[in-house]
Length: 141
Image 1 (cartoon, one colour):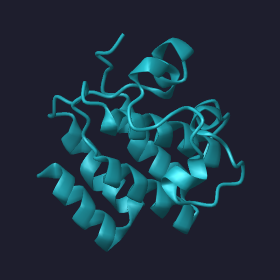
Image 2 (tube, helix red, strand yellow):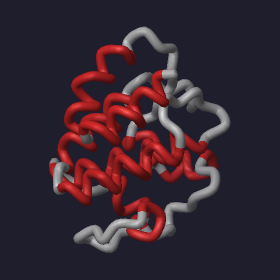
Image 3 (spheres, helix red, strand yellow):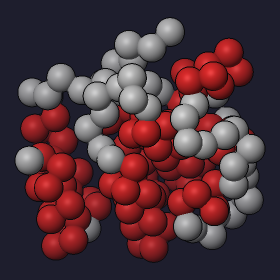
Image 4 (spheres, one colour):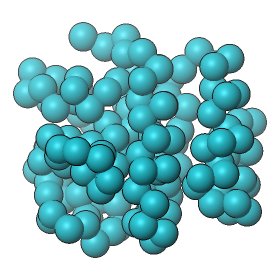
């Protein structure tokens, strides 16, 4: 239900409005999410499914990033803006496809949010949306 609400709001208002309207509702859901710091550790690479650390960020997300990074390199990107979005995009993608997690967003949702961030240049709003989902608490070890 909330996922549908996010998709509809994103289509109508864009990422910034979705973030403002949808984020408070997340507090009532029992979702999981692991941070970029979890996914970038080599001893957790065995928990990556569908994707590998060497996959191209640009190819996976269908965007023309400025770095031409692999997913692993994107997880290690520094700073805010595009780097922050890259870190949280990869973590959110891995969270979404992990069968061990109850992640709020689907793989399609994550890719759409990243593409919208690149299309509008609003990296920070897209990053904030994904970061909130990634920070729900990681049950993996």
